[in-house]
Length: 164
Image (cartoon, rainbow, N blue to C red; front, side, top):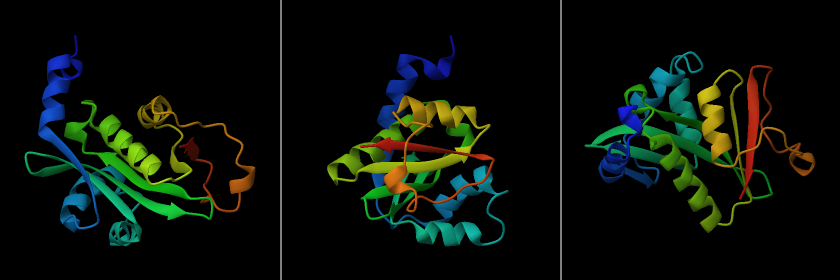
């Protein structure tokens, strides 16, 4: 049995990992999580620009250290959210923290009457796609009324949406 998926380990993680939402996290906490995960996509200071563009930021902390982040912005006139970046530091992956963070975002979006959450991930990032689909996101969706409001993407990306 994989120790990281044991009930005791998950229960321990629930007690020690705190997830919160605001915009006042120290910049270096967010960068320390996201830069190692996305550095090929964000050269120089472009990650800082992306962080600054987020309207909503959630972070997961364990023992005072940031181990996960979700950068999200409002999108379009239909009351949607766009997940700009979502990541869990590599040493903290596989412990259910990404699932918990995503559930917090979804719960918050429902409470605040958003209509959908949209994101893009790389087509070969099977782990992320499984996480999003498990949470209810769909790859194949009809987006007719949203066509002009959703960010575009290239051949290497998979769009996913969750109507909340």
